[in-house]
Image (cartoon, rainbow, N blue to C red):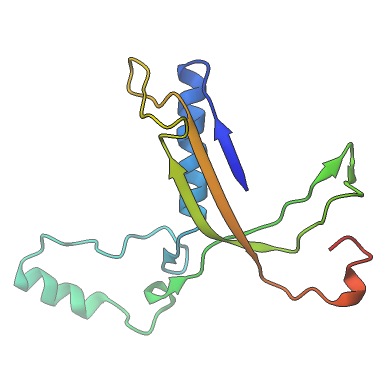
Amino acid sequence: MIFKLVPRNPDESLAIQNIVKTFRKAAMPSWGATGGEPMVQNAGATTEQAASLTNIINYGGEDNWIRVPNLCKFSFMHGDEPHPWLIQFKPCAISRVEVNYTSDGTFATYSDGAPVAVELSLNFMETKLIFADEVEAGY
């Protein structure tokens, strides 16, 4: 899916920046049980500090795992019903996020540095198989 996002004011520029960051973040793996902890917490620690931290870290704990990216569930709608002419999707992983700041062929910004236009390209991969009998159901 390819979206061309063109802000009309500074608020919309910030909204576009948040949309891009949200999709990029959702497509990336996260660290730890909650997904919010950084992998490198004490990069500037001395050797003695690092040795004392090693005794605290639980290497078998759930906070030492890389978590898979988020899944998306979206539907094409016609009013308040699924669109009868368009294929629907099962839960998907975002497999690629591409941001093009030169969607018009030339890089251009407003006076505050916000891009004049942003092209957001998203690829999705379904995480469940689609069987032949599900085609009639819209998949």
